[in-house]
Image 1: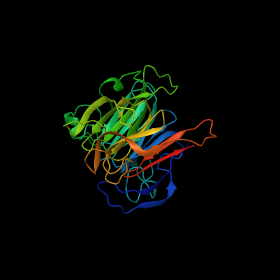
Image 2: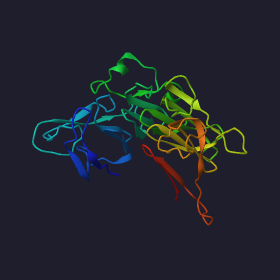
Image 3: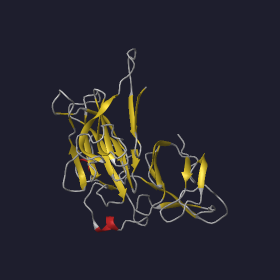
Image 4: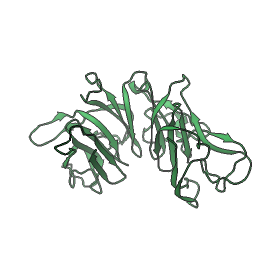
Amino acid sequence: GFASAVGSSATANKPPQQQQHALQTPLGLSKEHFVDVAAGLFHSAGVTQRGELVTWGCGRFGQCLVPTKVQNVTTQDGLVGSSTAAASSSLSTVGRWHPADGSKLVQVACGRRHTVALDEHGRVWTLGDNKYGQLGRRRRSEDATNTPANAEPQLVEGPLGKVNSRCFAIRSGWSHILALVRSDNDSGGGGGAMLYGWGRNDKGQLGVISTQSHVPVPQILKPTSNAIGSGERLISIQSACCGAESSHVLDVDGNLHSAGWNEHGNLAIGVDGGSGRRDCCLSWTIASGVRVVGPPSSKAERKLFAAGGAHLITMVT
């Protein structure tokens, strides 16, 4: 499909003087077909039908690609990717990139100051701010000074940076990332997936109790169930999503498990989930009274759930 955008066109160094209240196609993308799109705090990204990564918006922290050029177009506000065309001269607009080996990208996700993409071989690529390890590789000197002049995706460390990793989905919060990987006993038939996570963990976003505030490289997460009467057991994961500073996984039985920031009750685990803290939950906890199920007459159902900054929604189609 085609891409359209609405909302504030402000960036970290420009005030919100221009706001769009009707959907408009970002400049230079009017004829582009997309298979996936994502929105960060002040930037956006998409994957084209050709398997190319496209970004636009604020690139102050390297979360956007180096912009390409279009001729004879300028804008009133000068924002990258703005669709407010005015007069002449050349304009830096959206950035484009694809892996050097010709592989196609298939998914993209945006955090507050980073972008993550998945290619057809299961490799995970990241760019942007790495303050909390959200790029999935140990900090190097260039990460600390990443700017639009040198921003380019790099592979994460470990298995997810290699061909045939079996990764099939990526999700991003503000500063943490989850990745779903097909397990050895799952051929796509619902046998459960492996969960990897990395990035910020100061509020338990990854469900890992640790003395460190972040996890710098992808590691396997092993959520366990604490359901009454079942004892502690590993969760068989079907899907996952991220809130701003929280994580949620759906198991194959339709139960929802959450970890992370819970100041507004957005984990659906009660006041503190048994952690003793009201603002966050440091380990995976089953949601109270939430089980995603369909009507009795339903022969086939698709379970959906999504997290916003401070709320959670579930439904069945």
